Amino acid sequence: MINQDYHWYASRTKSRAEFKAVEFLQKHGVDSFCPSTYIFRKWSDRIKRVIVPLFSQYIFTRISCKELLFLCECPGIAGFVKNGGEPDPIPEAQIRALKLLCDHEDQYEMFPGCLRNGQSIQVIAGPFIGQVAEFISTGVRNQAYIRIGTTGLAIRIPLSQVQLLKLPSDV
Image 1 (cartoon, rainbow, N blue to C red):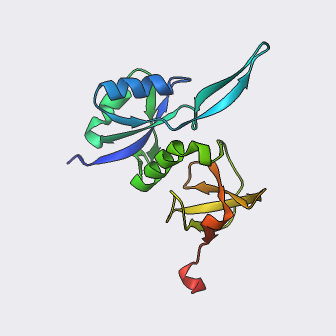
Image 2 (cartoon, rainbow, N blue to C red; image 1 turned 30 degrees about the vertical axis):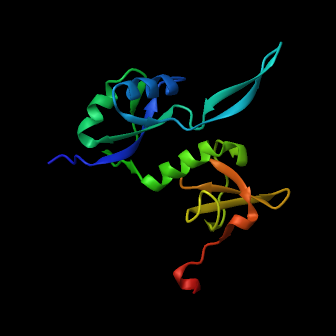
């Protein structure tokens, strides 16, 4: 029997089709989300602030396994992320954290891309409270650079909002 529960999935898109795919899916009643941020782009005659996806060629959709076929037939969608040939759902907490991050963009500096490994930490205050993250480095003015989940996205938050994660063997 096909699982009809709704979960979040990462969907691959064609190049530069993230926002168009989300718009199409939302028009058809599918809960979809493209985390994005503003950056400054420089051309020869001007500098402009533009919105870009945090994850190039990826969006997130909340659908059931039964609806995955519809997703693959949508314009701009190239497929979805699988693990062992099966659709790989994303935990709701990670999607909530990404949405919070985008909603509080003025408080956090975002750095898309791959980052080096570090210690496991837990966020103890702020909008990401309770999230387990990877500590990357410290910045100026008592700031911490961390990565939440396996997204490859780093954020900068006050160092006072994180603590070293205590493993059961450390207690």
